[in-house]
Length: 129
Image 1 (cartoon, rainbow, N blue to C red):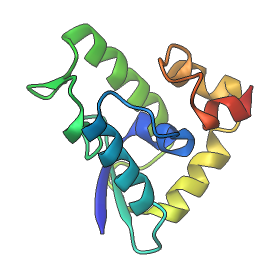
Image 2: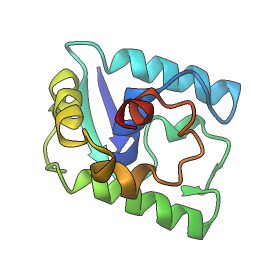
Image 3: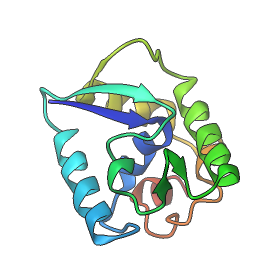
Image 4: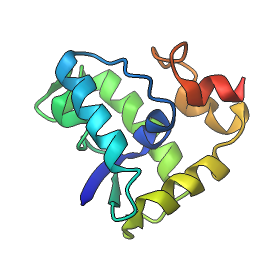
């Protein structure tokens, strides 16, 4: 199985608790979260709408919410993606292990997570507090 993930979603999946923007979004994110735990899952990285975004009610014409919000999200993606090779496809288990090692302090995630609306529900973020 192959999935496409944007940078900040690598962190979101590590702390996902079943909350989301809509029922369809939660079901899709739950499915992708399970897929990424499979040994045969391959991940390609992007800073554009991905397989999680495909079910988001805030996505319109490939833009998240509005132009300004979309720019902020792309910056979050780029912060995470700066640690990875975008030309490479990753084994999901190896990728998420690497993500956990590279983003293991508040300081390392502050530019990605600092204004996230899900910070109170996110196990990944709470673990760093």
